[in-house]
Image 1 (cartoon, one colour):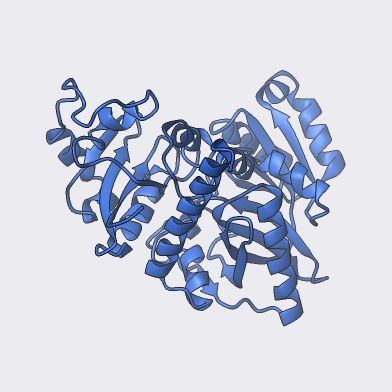
Image 2: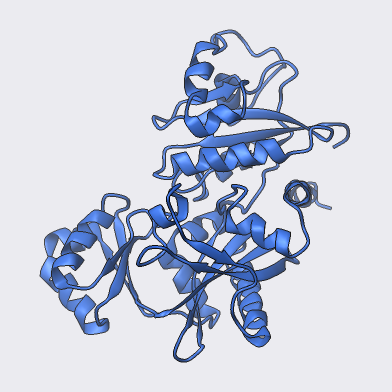
Length: 373
């Protein structure tokens, strides 16, 4: 690719993290070097409608972008002006994002949660033949599904806490049996969460049987499977990973949540008093081990581009436990992922440049395979 690249920033989505996605996308858009990139904004509404948007980026976080995009929407019944499109790329034309002079060179899906971070939209880009930032279908799906990520981590001998998974049918048909299993494996407190969710949406810290029942049903509002995890009394630690087949790990940061745990409010509320410490209050040996585990987890899930690995370091023993891997972490200016790289010597704009380079590199590698090179 030569000249100014057209970057399609996809934001919003139908997940419970719609609002977080808009804020992340606004930060990305404002930080891209306009001497290198032409930005094409594509919003996905909560109802699943795709809309091209050409207004101020500041309207993304407020939600006003949608009214502007719908008011200015192009008549999609007109034939495409740029020649033939394959069926997967047609959805971009229908949104108004692809038309004469507006084809997308690279997609940057700044989407968190279901239908954006779970491999579904990545499959669309694969079919359309568009390079895209982040992990592929498999890596995205595994990173999003906390249960299957844990199975892979277990296979790779990565240390983690005890866990159980329950389907909706198991909980609905035999709640008592589910409770017995939980109480046989764990002591209170424990954590209950949807298998497929992010930003701590639907997550509960459970200290009683009554709270367990409520939390199981609440988690089912977000996914058909529920994960129950051991409570680990430890420091909450995060490490950023960047790269494809030869990734690098950042220094590590520590979260000091203002609430009982690092829930949605503690992460995103304007009133939050949660603190971030970079580097974390850990020995150099522990930091290096966490970085090693982060890279191992990244490769085990076949991730690409970026990910944030989350850990606990048990207070009494100093033992490290991996919690999960987030393949499209928050990307606001105050989010941990860009802050960790800034502390490691990579500025926000340079980080975006590198992610775009990695997307192109991964795509060209796939093209070489298809051409038999």
